[in-house]
Image 1 (cartoon, protein in one colour):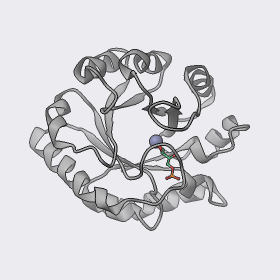
Image 2 (cartoon, protein in one colour):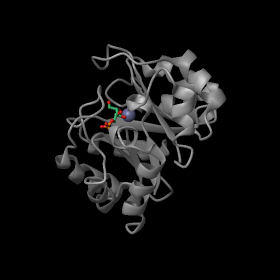
Image 3 (spheres, protein in one colour):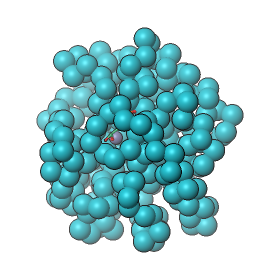
Image 4 (cartoon, helix red, strand yellow):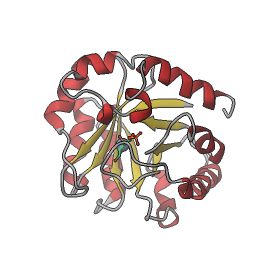
Length: 217
Ligand code: DX5
Ligand code: ZN
C-alpha cells in the first residue's frame, strides 16, 4: 500500500518545499499535461529534471500527453523511477513500455474513465503498474468516480491470473472518504492531490490516508 501525493495541488512557486512536505510518502506524483491530450498545461521535462535533483522521494510521472512513444522515455532517462503513459495516446505501447524499462524506470499505462481495460490485458506482460483514472484527466480537485471501481476489480483479477507483482494505481478524487473503497477494490497505489495539499499538514494527511488503507493490505 503506497501513497503518491500529486503536486498538481501544491504551490508551484515553492515546489522544493512542497516536496519536502511529503517526504513521508512513497512517491511524488508529477502530472505532465501538454494542452493537447488534456485541456490543461502544467510542466515538462526541464522542470521534472529540476524536481529530480531536490526530491527526497522517487518521482512518479503521469504523462497526459500526445505522442508518448516519443516523449515518455526521456522522463525515465532523466531519473523518474515510474513513468505512466496513457494507452489512448500510445501508438506502440509494447515498444514504449520496453523503452521506459530499458531506461531504468517502472513502466505503466493509464486508462481514462471511458476506456475499457480488457482490450489491454495482454499488456500486463510488459508493465509494472496500471493506472485506473477515477476522474477525467486534466484537473485536480474533481469528484471521485466510484463507477470506476468495477474496472479496478477487473484489473486486480487480471493481475492475479497473470501473476507477478503489478501495482494498481488510482488517481483522481482520492481522499479519506474514498480511499478505502479503492483499496477494497484492489488498488494498492493511491494518488491524492487536493486531499494532501489542501490539508493543514500534508505529512499528516499522508499518514491519515496510509492508516485508512493499512487494514486492507
Ligand atoms: C488529474 C491528475 C491527478 C490530480 C489529482 O488529471 O492526474 O493526479 O492531480 O488531484 P485530486 O486528488 O485533487 O483529484
Ligand atoms: Zn495524475
